[in-house]
Image 1 (cartoon, one colour):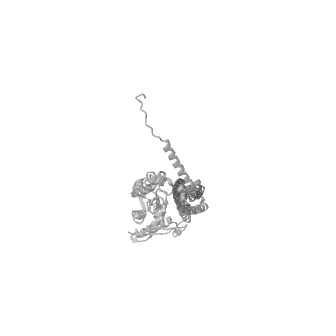
Image 2 (cartoon, one colour; image 1 turned 120 degrees about the vertical axis):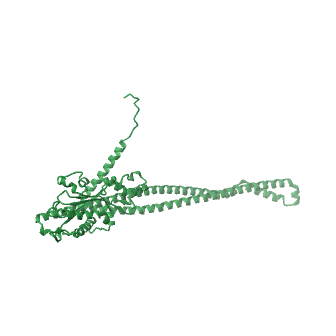
Image 3 (cartoon, rainbow, N blue to C red; image 1 turned 180 degrees about the vertical axis):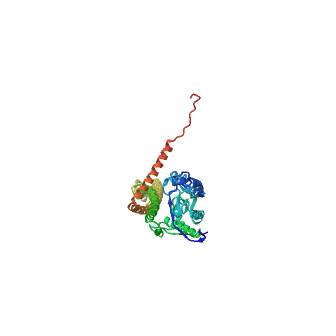
Length: 467
């Protein structure tokens, strides 16, 4: 359909503006009516959709939230309500809003002939919004026809689905959602959000052209505008761009601080693991040294026993007695007559030799058993020492791995610190504001925990009717 003027098809020129809004649902849905709203024209507003934000959060994030909580071993890291978590964490906005307007109040006011054409363009754009933006879930959209110029409020929740080491797999992230839709940052003057906004404006421009309205850039419309009005509009665009840049920087800063906190947490856990490993290493080392000392003592005892047993044999009195008996028998056994005359002494010395031999054999067997026992015990202690040394080497290897991991985490932490320092130099005001928001969140959690501790439901005592 083309805009008709006196029966002739003509192309009319109109500006097109788009920006990120504050997201005031009370204003958008006219729960609160401001002074610039014509109450009699509220009925003319075009409602595209009005869904429950709470239900939308449950539909989008409950499954991922359940998966995230199931992985947590600490209760304080679990998230009870993702919507409340986003609202208070300040890492991302609960939802985002974008505004679009065709023309201005001078050429496309609500009482002009172009009003309905502009509204039709915005309505067609809004109803196809999710087809072009599958990662931006629309829950509230309205075209205001009760102010000076028709304009569109679109409220949506960005959804990104990415595999992450920490955090939810499906989460609220405008940058992540736009990146998955193919948008990209092209420098400070063309951030990923501005890139997406320009793509959407280009689409609206095509819809305008289909209705006989040519999108003319503000610079191109300068000749047809008073200089003062042009400067005001230009200034407004610059302020809008600055607001977008600030929102983007706050979002990026929150993401960086989240990474820094995650790195610090990982570093603390790693240092704790290293400390435990070092304690374990110290304990195993002490046990190994103790085993080595005990083993050395046992080996020394065995060696002393082994060297002592032969000395004992040499110093036995029985040896002297044995030699005497052999000598005496030798004398008595020199001749047959001597044997006959000394039969009883010979038998006596033979008995003595038998007794000495028996005693020597028993002592030899006892010494053999002692030596065998000591050797066996020595082998056991050697095995114990080798096992302790293996454990010691395993712990040292584990400690080396943890030390390497610690160096990696410290390196990442230094990189985060460098980014943080750079942000502190480039945007100190934004950084202070972000720190204040994080501190406010921390204090709020502490107040909530204090209230939970103070609240102790007690069982009401029976009054027995004596009130």
